[in-house]
Each structure stands twice: as C-alpha cells, then as structure tokens.
Amino acid sequence: METTDIKKNVQNILQTLPPNVTLVAAAKTRTGDEVKAAVEGGVKVLGHNYVQEAEQMHEEIGEWTESRDVKWHMIGHLQRNKAKKAISLFDMIETLDSFRLAKKLQKECEKADKTMDVLIEVNSGEESNKTGVTPEFVKELVHKVSELDRLYIKGLMTMGPIGGNPENARPYFRLTKQLFDELSNSPKDNVSMETLSMGMSNSYLQAVEEGATLVRIGTRLFGPRACMTQFSNQPKHNS
Ligand SMILES: *Cc1c(COP(=O)(O)O)cnc(C)c1O
Image (tube, rainbow, N blue to C red; front, side):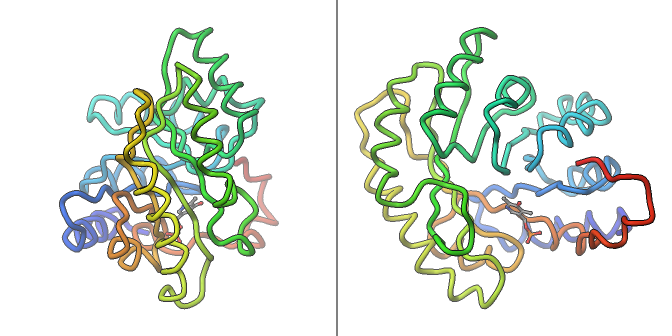
C-alpha cells in the first residue's frame, strides 16, 4: 500500500479511539517503509509476531524508531529459545502464557541485568486459537509470575475468536476484562493491571467498548497481507 494511504489510515483510526487507548501497528510481513509511514501517521507502538522478523526490521529501522520513542511489543507466540533475543528487542512481551517461559525470561533478564514488562495472554476464545492460558488458570499464573522479580505484569492480552461477526467476540472480551478487574487490586509491587490488549482490525471497536486500552491493528492500516501462494515463485520469504 502507498505510504500516504497508510498514514491516512492511521490518522483515521486514531481519531476513532478514545485518548486512553493505544494503537499497536501489527507489523508482520510489512516492509520498513510501510512501518515508518505508520509511525509518521502517529503510531507509538509496533507489534511483532516473530523474533527473527523483528530482528531484521530492527536492523533496518531500529535507530529511527528509537529516536522517536516508538516502543516494540512481542504479540506473537514466544518460544523459550528466543527469550534472550526477545528481551533485547522488545519493550513488552504481550504473550506470556506459561510459567516455564516466565522462568526463562527471568533468567535472561538476570543475565542481561534488565527487567521486562509482560502481559498474560488469555486464551479466551478457546476453540479459535491454541495459545494463551485458559481463563481458569490466569490467576494462578499471575501469582506464580509475581514471584519473579525481573518481570512486571502490566495486564492481560487476548485474541478472542478470529474473523466472523465481531459482535460474537464480545463475550470473550468481557471475560478477559472481568479477569483484569479481579486482578486489579493485587498487593504485589510487580503486578499492576494497566493494559488490556484486545481487538484487531475487524473487532477493535467492540474491544474498546468492552474496556480495551490497547488495540492491535494490521490490515486496516496496511491493507490485506499477501497470500502465501503469491510468494511461491519467489525466494523463500523469511519470517
Ligand atoms: C496480525 C495480528 C493482529 C492484527 O490483525 P489484523 O486483522 O490484520 O488487524 C493482531 N494481533 C495479533 C496477535 C496478530 O498476529
């Protein structure tokens, strides 16, 4: 998509968002120039799904985004063997969904003498996606992670069901918001429910109505993603 169109899309969406809601540009498969256009339109947070893709983009535009105080969030599933790279690339991991991963992040943060902000990913849609912790185990995971002093739990993230009528996503957003509220008076210093990340291109308005403070949007900013078959005659696409 033309960079001027991307800028306009960002500005249009920012106008529809209440001031307390942050727009995350979901950057998967997009070029450095497309992402820069989104930042020029007003995006303050970039979301990445893959550590390797984020690393490549960081080499290309990392200094440029840093000088504009743009934050980088991991929004895809994080594998433990990528934890070390992830803590060097990202300002927040939105997809913490197991204590094993939390322990690995804690260890890498200790080694690098860092701390990391995290969201707990809730598998609210259950059928539609396999990542995230199921709602009944969210509190237990928050409790265990709160014992890890390098990790700061800043809230919850959920995907909800993907596609379909966005009205059908409301019960999943509501469930996640309810957990968020229940956790919001935690006595632990490293647990503060500030960020509720939910809603994508087709469901962000419903998500905001249900209490989201951060929405992750790709298609509505950058246009549809190229279908994989369109890459089949080209050198292997690295993501
Ligand atoms: C791709 C992606 C989004 C954005 O999806 P769109 O439908 O393109 O807006 C949001 N969250 C996650 C985790 C994603 O992978």
